[in-house]
Length: 193
Image 1 (cartoon, rainbow, N blue to C red):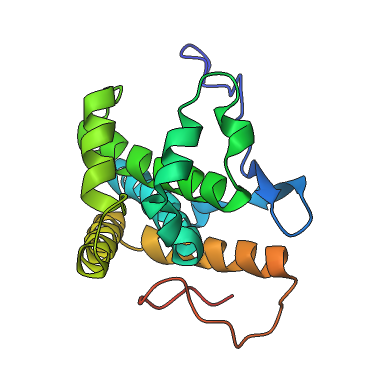
Image 2: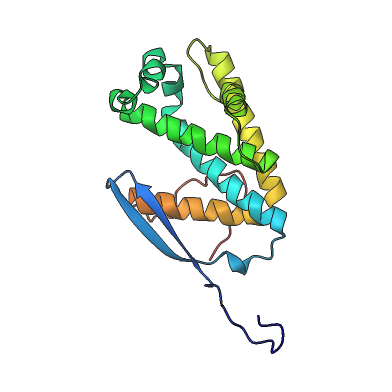
C-alpha cells in the first residue's frame, strides 16, 4: 500500500500453489488454489498449522516404514560419501525423508533458528527407531511423536483441522481413493466442505 495515496501497489495472491511428489505415479504434481485465508489464525497458530501438518504427514509415512530405522546396514550405507543414496532401499529413503520432515518441523518451531547437527542428532534418537532398539522402545518413541503432534495441533487451534483435511485430500489423490470411508489422519474432527 502506498502511504501517500493508500493505493495498493502490490497484491499478493489469495491462493497458494504447492508441488509434491506422488509415490504412486513417481511424478511431481502441482496442487493449486490452496486457500488458507478462510481461517482466522494468529501468526503462531498459522506457524503451528504448517508444522503440525508436516509432522502428521511424516507420521503417516513412518507408519509404513518405521522399522527401516532399525536396519544397521542401511544406516551405514547412507553415510558412504558420493554413493550412499544409491545403496539404500526405497523404503529407507522414505523413512529418512519422513524423519527429517518431522525433526525439522519440531525443531524449527521450538527454536525458530537454524538447526545444529547436534540438535538434529538428539531429536533423531528421541523420536525415531535406531538399530538395537527393542519393540518397547520403538513403541515409546512412536508415542513420543504422537504426543508432539497433538501438542503442535493444540497450538495450531482450528488450523490443525485444516492441515488434517489437506493431508486427507492429498492421500486420496495419491491413492486414487475418493470414497468417504477413509480414516482421518488425526484423532481430531476435520472440516467438512
